[in-house]
Image (tube, rainbow, N blue to C red; front, top):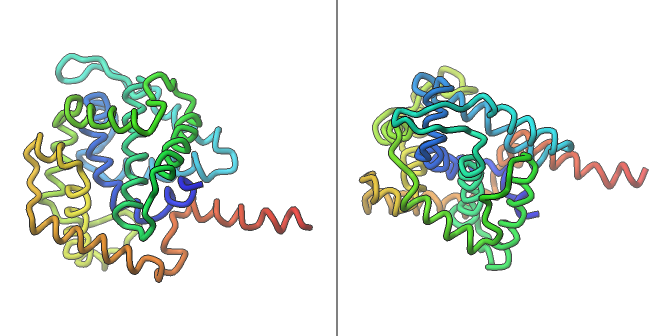
Length: 271
């Protein structure tokens, strides 16, 4: 499927950062992260813990179990936000928005960083596959748009009217605009200069540049012409050169395991 082809692609990191900011702009998600995680002191922890399991809802052999496990992680995340509004991570509208940002990220990966041009039927197909992906969590599908056109309309409504500059989102945007990356999990200490001087501008371009223009305008998030040109150059470079990267570098481990498993399946049947 198209979702299988692209979700585990490591280039999702370029579109996933802006997805994370969009999640934090949702009032319920922002409140949940503020009240139930150490995001302000360790912003990478949420990403490191969440992404492999989310990929597992597509690539694991027992994807239903993985999906329900991801859902159950969120059962205790509920409360009252700073404005006195009740929130719950398992509220269907809240959970759907988190999923919608990932759905959008996969489509953006293809549109901006891949050589393949999605046709209209392929966009519809990718969205239908995203509906099955969402179903695996076992959360109410009541707020889920039934078609790609309805999804686009609902997406624009959230961007224009629902999202807020929550404290968690404000922190994430400030990090992207002003802080230098260092001490990323999984990287040795001697890469810190590389993280600060190379990863920092890449993350700034992709995190802020990947936000919908309407969101940047609405919240006054700066991204000028020079930034746009740099981002377009980065996207072009990856479109042309990604196929030359060694395959182990191109796939997240959970996705690589899935690819290996399905590749071995025909041999197992033949034996």
